[in-house]
Image (cartoon, rainbow, N blue to C red; front, side):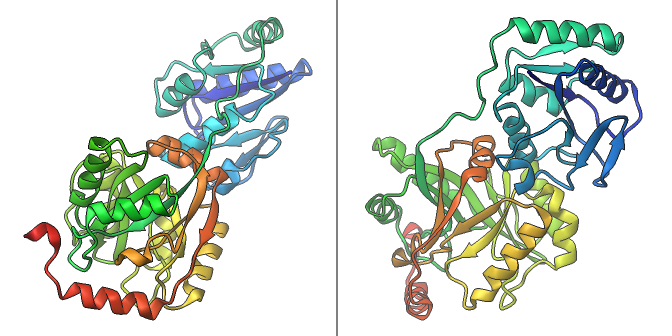
Length: 378
């Protein structure tokens, strides 16, 4: 039998909610039942609380999303703020299998509570007092109940390109109709349309596939230029103004509920955020582009992969296509998704796919097309 106990407030912050969650988890463990205590934390250090080892993650990256045996330990998800990656990590814990009962301890209504309620509608709530009595009741309930179904059910795998441009970018002439036709020919199931400083291309592509009943998911996105490099917001509702500080741009995207994706972070031939800045912003980044199909030097991708691995950031990949022939030179194979939460979850099972082409030839086509007036400007 295994019980998952969720705390509604950070586990490393003294208070009645965190103390009660720890007490309930320890009382369950005392009865010989395997328990996993889950919550957020401000401190990423390894900690020990009573007999429970707390594995505090700096953020909810690849380590939290991996299919691992949870074991009788505390898993601390995320940091002081919730991201889509943290959302996915919580769902992974619940859906990891062998969970007989999901318990929420505490009275606070927080982001963690909302995710647990959604991922495990049958989750039981208990208050802040009577830990041993509550633990006994919880164990009996778990023993009398059927095992909770996995929140992460297998899904059909699709191919997706997470970074591409259309004629709504000033340096690209690819029309929406041509883009969709090419994507279908390549067998793609999803496109993140990331035009420069504009969501217009994404909305145009989304409207086109919906009007024609085309089975292609479009994530309306934008690659926004900041004072130090670029950042992509996926599932944006409206434009983000260019030229803001990197941190302000990310916060503006998060205010829209967007998925934060940092493209080509080590392409030193262009303006990029500094490594210290990326490290500071890591708790707010949902994925890092570890393969960009249009980079002049492959070592830039290698450096991105090493950085993402070190910080536990989920990995993304995209073609950065500025011409039609460049579509899906890089991308991902992953479970189907439809919003930021399901995308974050799908990245835990993603595999990078590459179809490299001659970079100079693609760049030459881009330079030629750049001299032509964008189609949408007619």
